[in-house]
Image (tube, rainbow, N blue to C red; front, side):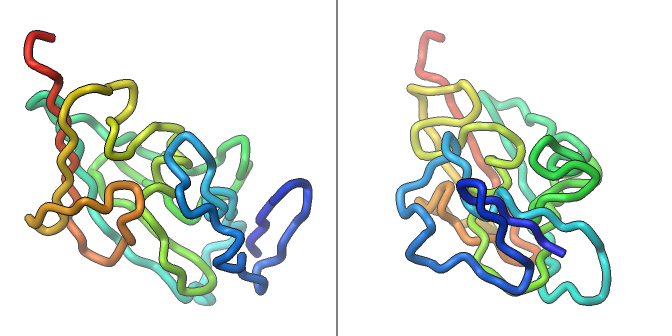
Amino acid sequence: MINVFDDNEEVQADQQIPTQQQPSGSTADEMHPFGKYCLTDHNSSMQMHIHPYLTIVIDGEEYDIPSNAGIDTETCPSAMHMTHTHDNSGKLHVENYTKEDVPLEVFFDVWGKHFNETGIFDYRGGTVEMTVNGTVSLDYENHILADKQNIVIFYTSPQGE
């Protein structure tokens, strides 16, 4: 069962959020509607179960992606968000009862971290580059997640910092 909460209105698992209700310019500082999806059971009825990989490099140092991000949160107590981790390998789990186009932003929203072309986490003012399977992508938070993608986000601080 998925519970989606939108302005105190609960939407059941078999209902989808219409595209027109999804904010078009949403950033990691706003919760994407998919960030509110909670998976309360993990069974064979899953229509979507993909595993992209995320690596974050800040000023040449790889940043750990925590285990259990998106599991048992305030929004989804005793449940999982549709994007979550189980370990700190960078493997993202994207699961849902229906197939959806899930942007990278959803994972950052669930994790509670900022990411878009302006910066990552609290790092701003430098250069942000994102590659997907080795090719530069300018989609940033709007990038649609797919199985076995290798997403690498590089942040380089301005010189002199």
